[in-house]
Image (cartoon, rainbow over all chains, first blue to last red; front, side):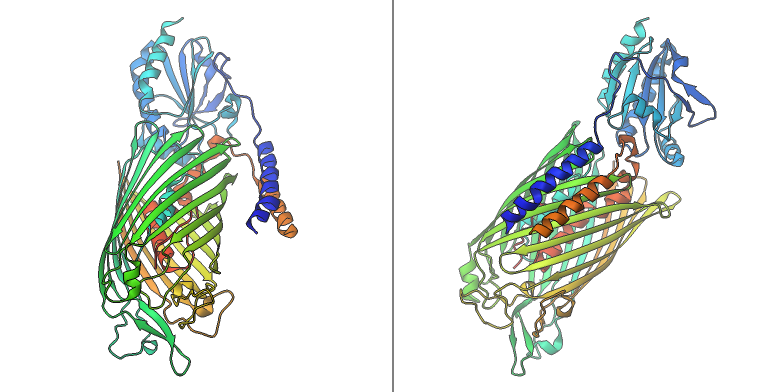
Length: 174
Length: 388
Length: 71
């Protein structure tokens, strides 16, 4: 009885199911190292007004996509805050784009992990789509010329040092 | 709880298998739980002998949990269970002169202890996990060792997760007071082995819901009878199959809620088959700095009897016989309420469940015979978690 | 047998086509603890321990089947 079930039901099931699911989630475009970073203009999260990426051409910008429910973000935001405080005078900027559906969730998170760099909000998810985000969190390190130098997925405590080094290298370039 | 093999620990530890794409947790958690399990007395009118004790099992269980990340992508979970048990269980059932079912309770009330240790390391990869489990259980009259491996793989951009696990266990019996009966003496030193696999798929349906379906197969071999029961002779092999589905649905009620529903179909070659339906509503309520998750739950369980189950000593043609209620036809309802109060790094738990079983609750296949040994019990748990 | 086969195919197609694309940043609701905490590991460990020793059936759920030595 078991082998008939396996043959007649599970095999066709697996094939049909896989086809439909694969079609549902077919590949999309993603921004890679060397590409020009897509511009965005988004409302600020913690204050009024907008923030636009192109107005910071000439600086080294770290665009970080985060959300209150993303575990590694609890490590990344404080770590980035330290790096920002050290390197802002040399022309380093972090723009942290929040993707929470509820603004209150984002504000609660920032109460627990306050940051000195600007935060923005993209509730419709247009910007992460433009960048072809594959996972949360993902960050894009952009050089002074506006090109993507690094795509950083996830975040572990040990990433800080490496990031710091890469940012300093980019800051030295004109 | 008697003779809990370490293999059943696998079901529990395997609950730690992430069913959705996850990263290695970064928190260390210390947990403690105290639980009390209390069975209702055996029915007075069914137990002959006015001095027979009606008291069934009362069990105290303490659980100590420790889970922590190791390096960037490893996580290890450990649990220690310590249990003390007292009370009596039925040795057999019979029918009296009027054709009514009767229960014979074991004479002395036992006092037993059990220690259970489980360790489960897990490695997180970008698109899946791989884990293992070691479980050891030891009590006065039984010891068990189990090993398992499990893995998950995310496909279709983490919308689908393939889940697989495999485990084996090896147990040894050493019944107490082997002078009391031949079955006890015979079972002493006998072994029981098991081999088990589970394959499942977890699918994200939309932003608010997921569904998981899976098939499991287990094979038990060795001494499978109950040495403490009078005239209990079961086959030395049991093949078990389960088919299960779980669904989770988020609902925007108050501060967030989710409905968890599951169904399991079980079938084995002893003739037993069962259905289990489980419903839980997890409701989140913000109370200033505290957050409460209140979870009422219901469960319905029904099973049909094993081929060789009989209320009296009526062995089948192959000589198998058991009057253990766990192989009879019956149904059972559980109602319960779990609560978790979160405050900063702390979580406090308070859970309660009441289980009631009756022949008449069975979905199908009732007989005219009553099963006086059916158990009703209630459990109560209090616990604390600390994350850092 | 054929009926079950047909029903399963239909069920899978219905479920699969009902499955929408959920972008990585749209996983907030799925990560909420009400969605995950109903199966707290120590709690399920205890529940399974009890059910597998007090009932005829065992296993199912996410695990390799139980093999309870509960006699």
